[in-house]
Length: 150
Image (cartoon, rainbow, N blue to C red; front, side, top):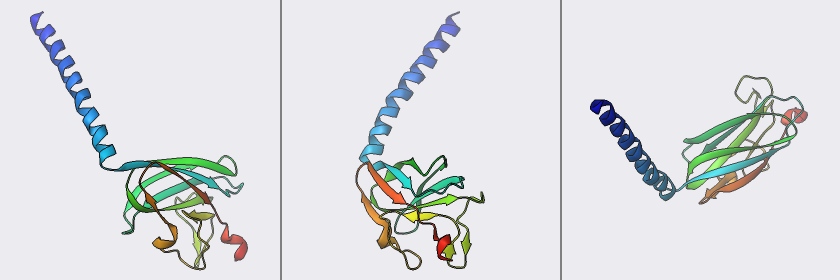
């Protein structure tokens, strides 16, 4: 019986110590400059599918991804634990289900957009779509359907 009591006390002690270690880790994440980005996406088509969002930095390093099922002409998605600094968001509506932006030559065959909603006349560059992330923020991105321009 003494052994089972000791095991029980040891388990409780481990759980308490683990909780104490979680609090500084949460604080370290905030101190390290990790933030959330809420993405309000509009311009979705009635074709349904999945919306994919990708956050990247100026070195094209992916900082986070999220996705959600289309159920209307707009939706809200959220990225968490994105580091401070300049980032860019790329969003597209995957209507054909292949989990990638389908292209026809240089034009996308699926609705897409970027942070800052730049007017594009060719491939975008980071400077057109970047924004400084220093706190939790919301970005509104309107998808453009280039299929009508083909």
